[in-house]
Amino acid sequence: MLYTDTLPPWTQNIETTVHTQLRDGEPMFEGVFTEFDFSQVLQGSPEKRSAAYQRWFQSATYSPNELRRADNLAPIGDATDPENPANQIWVPLNMLPVGAAREEIEARAAASRGMPTFEAPASEPSKNGKAKHVPAL
Image (cartoon, rainbow, N blue to C red; front, top):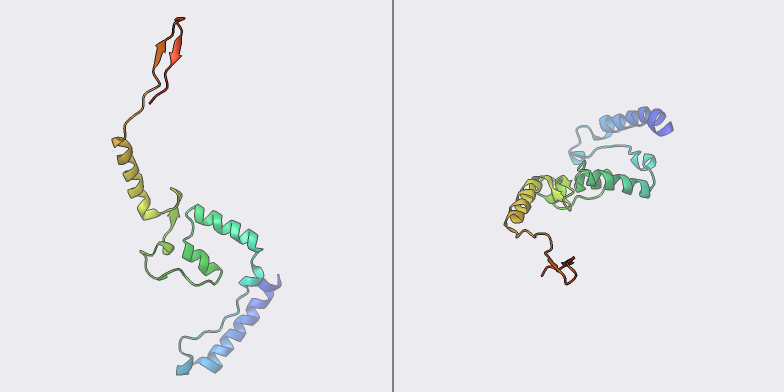
């Protein structure tokens, strides 16, 4: 396992050396960091990643911005705003944020209570004495 066992100790030494010898105490390098990123090498094919992301999103495991972060993509909207729908976990009620799911379920239940109920289709006797189906209007 070259990328998981052999290279990380070496790259950590290089990162530490760059940090201590070049950046430490330099105001122009404030907020800059050095990092070796092997995630592109270790990730699977785009099809497998896409299928995994889809399963994670649909099972309310990750938010859209968390999945975008996994591929080093820019966030949708403000990544620090908890009200941003892209930062929220969604649940399958045709994909609602978790916080809105309870409200949606209650709204649908209230709407269904006010809806008329439909009874079984009526039937009437025919000339030969057998029941004849009468379609509902």
